Image (cartoon, rainbow over all chains, first blue to last red; front, side):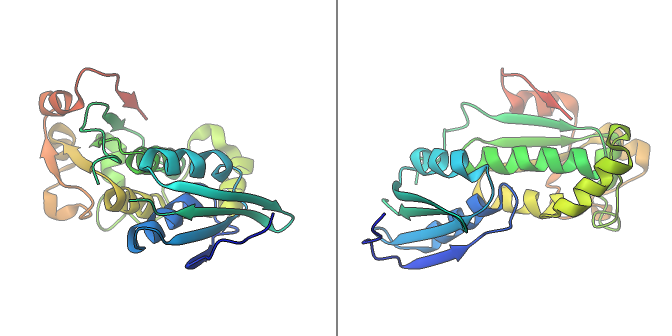
Length: 80
Length: 141
C-alpha cells in the first residue's frame, strides 16, 4: 500500500453517513483541475460500492482503495 | 461534461406523498444518488410531502412513519446525518433535479408558491408530470 501518488486535496468524511462521503468527493472533483488527485476518508460502508460506481460512471480514475483500522481511503484522479 | 449525464433517457420520477422525516430522507437519498449518477430526477409533491416543503415548516420535526416506533425514532436521531432538505439541495447542485408541487394538493392545502421553500420549482398537474416522467416506472413514497 505504498502511497506514491501526490494528493492535491484530502477530505476527511469519516463519521458522515451515506451518501455524505460521495457527495463530498463529487464537490471536490468539480473544483479540481484535470489530472489532480483527491483522497477521501470514509467510514460509511456504502462508500465501498458507491465511490467506485460514481468514479466509473463519471469517467475518472480510482487510483487506490486502502482499508485501514481508521477508515477507508479512496484515491481518485480527475480524468476529464 | 456530457458523460455524467444520460440525456434524460433514464429519468427517475419520484412521487412523494408522505410527509414524515424518515420517508422524505429515504426519497432524498434516492434523488441525490440518482443525480450523482447522471439520471434526471423529477420529484412530484403531493399531500403531506407537499405540506412538509412549506417554507415555515421544512426545518421542523416531521416525525416518522408508524412502523418506526420509539426504537426506530431513537435510531434515526442517533444516526444523524444531513437533513433531507439539504440532500435535495445537494441533488440539485450535482444534477438535473426538478421538484414540482401537485396543483391539486396546492389547492387542497390552500398554498401558493410563496408559501413553499425555494427548492420547489413550480406547480403542475398530473398529466404534465407523467409526460416528463417518460415511459418508465414511477416510484411512490
